[in-house]
Amino acid sequence: MSTTSLTPRLPVPAHAARLREALLAADFTADGLLDLLGAPAYAALARSETVPALRATGGDGPLETLVRLFLLQEPVEHARAAAALPLDEAVADGWVLREDDTVRATVDVRPYGGPDGEDWFIVSDLGCAVGGAGGVGKKGRQAGAAVVLGVGGASTTLAGITVRTPVSAALDLGTGSGIQALHAARHATRVTATDLNPRALDFTRLTLALSGVPEAELVTGSLFEPVGDDTYDLIVSNPPFVISPGAGLTYRDGGMGGDDLCRTLVQQAGERLNDGGYAQFLANWQHVDGEEWQERLRSWVPRGCDAWIVQREVQDVTQYTELWLRDSGDHRGDPAAYRAAYARWLDEFEARKTRAVGFGWITIRRNGAVASGAVEPSIVIEEWPHPVEQPLGPTVLAHFERQDYLRTHDDAALLADRFVLAPEVVQEQVGLPGAEDPEHVVLRQNRGMRRATRVDHVGAGFAGVCDGTLSAGRILDAIGQLMGEDPVLLRDRTPQAIRLLVEEGFLLPVDGGASGEGA
Image (cartoon, rainbow, N blue to C red; front, side, top):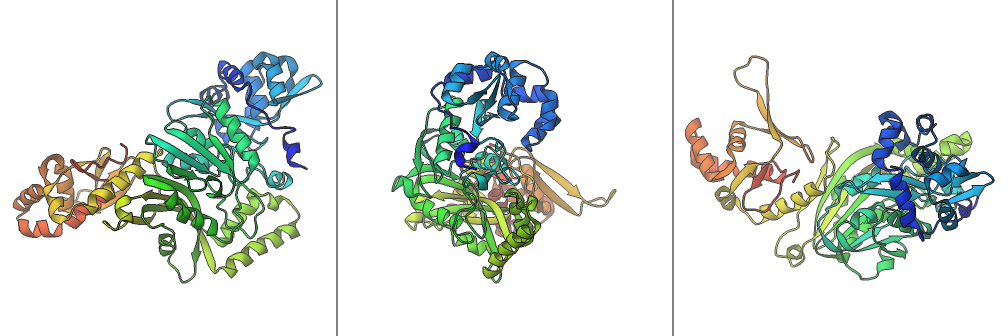
């Protein structure tokens, strides 16, 4: 099957505004779908399971017609299609095809709710509206590896962790169907989207036009090659990060050995950032025998940059192999071919001494003070497999603000400052039922990263009193008097604990400019 057989021809956005009006008039939106289908069928549709949605769309209203046409890829009667959308224009522009007395869609069009309630639409190849493992099966290979996926869990994760401050220029590298460019259009004056796959740029153009946002600058090419020496305030990328033995599927296989594509992307991003600019990526990385994975990632951080890297998941090489063989549909084919493919993946990992693969988020920030040598870079690399609360963009911004604060405040300055307990922090006391005193005290965040930290009685008392009125030093003096401890010793041993509470977002400096986890 050729690429063009997936869609006889890609639509053009000539009358996208008219089509958008029709979709909105029919309530073909994320909220409208939820109301029509109900939560279970709506969730099943997000998993590419269509039977519940088919059962829920037996009516002949415009919304049922559009769901069957664009989401379920079912042919609909000509009269029903004409009642739901400007049919002549949709046919002329290539969104749908007439076949005798029926009409069928040439692309997936999936409603997508923006962060402020915007009604957006993600356009992708037929049957590929949901990305991720199992999202395309054999279609990617049949389409010459040029298949374009819709929105999946990885896409929404990256959109959620991205810092959303107003910027002049943003780059979506490896745009796919355009979801990151769509988000960037809300807060960037100029958006550039690149992709090695020219069809992806066509889909991005459709996504932006149908969502009613300005068109981005669309450039074909790999990594940073198509943008030359241009610099940006924000760079985002959900790259083809899969560590595989060959470049089979463009949307997932980067064509470089091991984790070299992700490493190259991160290392080259530093010189493409303006001072204070952020680059944020999803990535896979190898866990190699004889090497700490944290040190491997530390070596990726470009000069002149701070970094926060979070490992969210680790899979051994057999789990990882099975995940991506299912993604490409190899498990449904000839058993002997599947075993051979499995062996090729394991051979590749063995040759690279890779025992596991990590997945997570990488954020780097260009820092002029670090670049000039005035301060040491802040590089935080941690493992956090626990649940978090999206969106995390404000949390990411707050993390770097707190690092700036801590680098410029020694212990004496820390004790002279005032702090407040971050919103949504609660205290938990752990101990045996009926015991007079708890065994230990835990501070827990109910938002953002949802961290928890164990503190002693001094730490718990200190955090409970921090309301921004007294300096840290004066609070410790008062605690010393209450507990009969030497205030001088308390002032000597406590700053490190205060520093940790600030670094993790439990305490916020009143005058330090750092915001809270959920700010």
